[in-house]
Amino acid sequence: MKIKQLLLAMLAAACGLAQAGNSLNLANYQFKASYALDLLGGTTAGQISGLEASAVSYARDRGTLFYVGDEGTGVVEISLTGQTLGKMAFNWSGTGSTKHDTEGLAYLGGGVLALSEERLQDVYRFSFVDGGRAQLKSAFVSIANNAVGNNGIEGLAYDARNGGSFITVKQQEPQNVLAGSLSFAAATGNPPSTSGHGSTPPGGGVAAMSSLFNPSSLGLSTLSDVASLSGVDSLVGTAGADNLLLLSLGSRKLVEVNRQGQVLSSFDLSNVLPNNGIEGVTIDEKGTIYLVAEQDQSGLALPGVKSQLIVLSAMAPVPEPSSYALMALGLVGLLGAVKRRRDA
Image 1: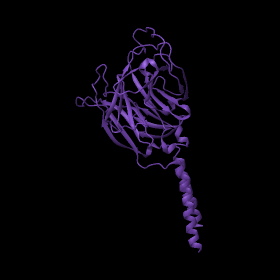
Image 2: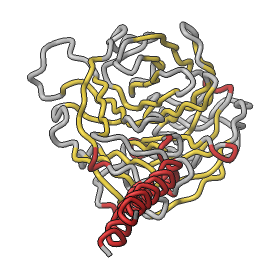
Image 3: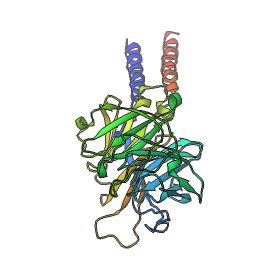
Image 4: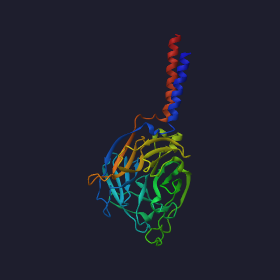
């Protein structure tokens, strides 16, 4: 009887591990390190800045990260420990953008990135060329085709499964989480004049995006970025691959949610660089989380203090989904051997 009870207990534990594969479980994470990012010319026009990092995206096929600052001057490629590897400037001519408020970034694979502009709620696609200059009007799409000021698209993520799809978050007034497809095309004319507030030019691609859930139920004061968990190897083949990470600058919190808006786990960022505004999040295939934060804004920082790359890592690795069945079979075999020895 004792062997049978032990077997049932161990099989239940194995099932518990399998269920854990349905969630990343942010409670299992800890702060690992932070790295200062290069200024690369500060905010001088035409140069790439590392002063106000606002979005970051992981490139699996390159083993690197890309990030942008909300100065909108360009994109920077960095190592996983923050060293600058390359940079590319943006040409905003013909886009209608006047503030160039770049708050979302998603890596699509093969050196291709998608960039979102907050105030016009437009998304631009381009190929990264180190030292080059991206002509953003050449491939863009408008999510909402209206200018909303400083409360628009604050985050952008890409899910490569099933032909690829996008997720965006709107910061506030109201908050929103959208998912769906985006196609990109070039502008066909100049944007109409709107007294300096910017306007989307005619042409462009087609957005087929719909709301996933009402984020007001999450209790987050703002939505600052989003990351898809579809590329995390330990979640492949489980419901957890559909989950999202939502970052809130205002609440200093990172939450894992499913696509029905249920909070599955959370990580408190209150004590992680508390004087820096954390605005961007991404995750690699191993489950390591990378965030970017603006420079220290306490007023006490020394001149030249830079934006930061923050790394969160899991305290214990999660087994691959295929391992759960093997673990259970191993337990059965082990206990069977014990029983045979006792019966001999």
